[in-house]
Amino acid sequence: MNALIPLLVTLPLLGAAVALVAGRHRRLQIAASVVTLSAVVVIAAVLLLAVDASGSPVAVSVGGWPIPFGIVLYVDRLSALLVGVSAVVLLAVLLFSVGQGYADGDDDTPVTIFHPTYLILAAGIFNAFIAGDLFNLYVGFEILLVASYVLITLGGTESRIRTGVVYIVVSLVSSILFLAAIAMIYAAVGTVNMAQIAERMAELPASTQLVLHLMLLIAFAIKAAVFPLSFWLPDSYPTAPAPVTAVFAGLLTKVGVYAMIRTETQLFPSSNVNTLLLIVGLATMVIGILGALAQAELKRILSFTLVSHIGYMVFGLAIATPAGFGAVAYYIVHHIVVQTTLFLAVGLIERRAGSTSILRVKGLMRAAPVLAVLFFIPAINLGGLPPFSGFIGKYALFDAAARVGTPLMMVLIVGGIVTSLLTLYALMRAWNLSFWRENDEPDEAEIETLDRVAYLKGAPAAAEQSERRAIPRIMTAATAGMVAVTLALTVFAGPLYDLCTRIGDGIAHPVHVTQLDEEATE
Image (cartoon, rainbow, N blue to C red; front, side, top):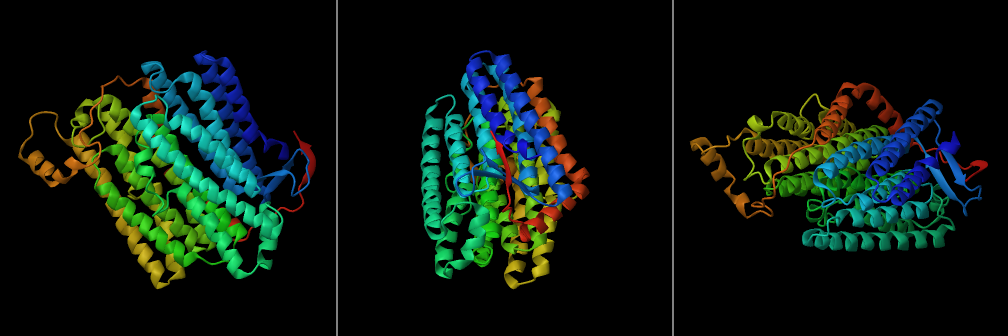
């Protein structure tokens, strides 16, 4: 079983090598990418079943090197679940990009570059989720940084290069903070292995623990786009190609949230900054959704809602109870799937209408009813309308907070409810203007509606128009498949939430793997 763990990283890297060697053989590159990600889905499912059945995490020291010299890969219920969900999302977005590539050629996403880089990005994501030591986690983040910079600037347009520079500068600042924190932790406790750090951290003075703790949190908060360190995200994601934006929105910020979970529960369980996290979580929720209300472009609306809903995850982490951790695990899975689906749907809207501005797009209900459904279902899900998974995740967070019952928790519950309602309003306003408005001369009702949102005319990208393009069936099928996955989160909410409850218990009472398999894994 342990031999499967390194394959989560090595398979995407080998797939990237095959895709790179294949050059311009499009079909071979697609086959390598699809087979690789499908294999990761299967391996992650096998590991999740094994770890869940045994109740204990598994770990392997790569190459048989002893701790603290070897690279340790660590898989528990949470990491196996996130690797599996991430692989499913990466596979769906890959199929979406294949359809876009066949329809548009290599102008937007050059195939020879996209497939190898995409698989390297996947390897970085998987490596971050199963890293058992801080330096390997840092390596995972750096793999993400290199691959994501290439993907975010695909096509070489001026806007993409400009936002790509901002993205990489912010990411480098975060990486420098992270690397400095690793150096200080190693100097203080003599190891970067997370299990050993957890054992030795209690020996340090409280003030030293707090400094190390805050350095890691700041580094990860930048990557997770936690307010006020989220300023870079709304301008960076919307300019990228639709498949890239979907992957970034669904996965990259969750890697930062995952690192925050490990920091809080495994490395610094006795260093309490929960009050600070609660305040930051509330600010992230409220400021993010207020930003969404001021936008007229669908990608920017979704980017701000992405920031806002990171606040729910920080909120759940700050509750610091098994129920809170379980709710966070469920909400992360929900948000990865739903946010990715919404960005894919917006990619279809852009092709069909030639714009993503809610002031310019209209009449799509009659022209593209399937597209209306593909956007509507994940939109009301993200808004938390029952009985969807968004409602289940939010209810679980509020219930866990209510059990704690402090005044600040009550404030966060109110803030979360208001944020959810405003999310629903922002997305339904966008859906109403884009789909429900008739595509003919405006009547009095439409004029009144446009007068109410006249303040959006000065919003970024409010008047942008691009070329209308046909929508290949595979792009619609990939988006519909993701919508089906969002519905599956609701249909199978019981078993999934039971799993997340066990994840929460495991996070609250971590089992540190100190006796690793001595077998060398090449």
